[in-house]
Image 1 (tube, rainbow, N blue to C red):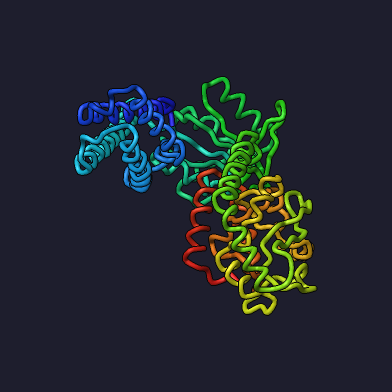
Image 2: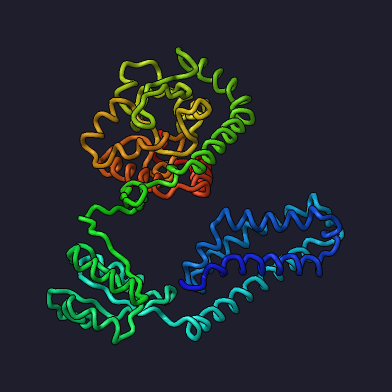
Length: 448
């Protein structure tokens, strides 16, 4: 989208202007100190960044953005009302403050509606759509047509050239005829499908484009190798395809996740584990013979083994390292059944997180014997071992936890683990943690 680099900064500045203006006019007492102004502005920055508001808003139309705005107003609303408990606004009633916040939301929505239609009108007059043709044809043409047909992207798809005759209404002729056509019809951009063109043809098109101010895009010959998480990296001037890219390959992302893991684990250990440990330990000891803790060798990142800690929930048995817990499993003790139902048995794994063997969120670690079995029978199973295992994970909150009863259970677990790896974000981790706690309180069918 041309001339779009100013959209996010302009929107952000105007949004802050609206918030500060309404607050200054309606609640002047909150602006007696500079830190009040700083709080509301930084809070808006953090909230919009946290939910990726501006980036998502640009990708969708006016009506499709409704969900983004609702989420933004709910989250910022919590921050907004929490502020009055410590910034000092006791002179205002709750109803009055609620009305002020509704006014802020109303003006933000009005601005965005006006801005949307103004931008749309500007595009029609000052920035006409780029006329594009595709040279060559393969399956990728149908996919890229979705981009061209989206009015948000400012493209006008004219048609395609290919050496194979086609009955398609958008077929423009043989590749050799494209050179005259792009000048006669004032074409702006050429998309070349590399699999259908020779090296000489691509070079010829590039030479013409470079000397006539036409832009050329090359769609690589993918050989059906592309994946949802693929990215292209440049090693000097050599393009290299990374078929299994993950946000966690970036150093700052790993740092953010590690800091969150340590802080969250310390919070749980200090605020929950510290007082719950003696209660659980006493219950386990009174219920059955054996140690309070149970440790088991499991596969972690890069299939390296580590000792995974748990509260003991079973009586001592010889199958603990080879057989998963099943429904009505006679090995599970009375106290153990409660621990497993509420997931309390997993709490000692927060020490695994502090030691760096695990993460709070990630693919659940399997027993060594399971890894050896599944890597032979489940496609892409080992991809999940690119990440540290987690105390909870996306597959678990989606219902694929515990016993593997049928093949689809492990297949879907792997599918969700790979999706998590490809789409990781701190926001996704927080959502998974929330639903983990929610499911533990609500109770899960496969929590046994």
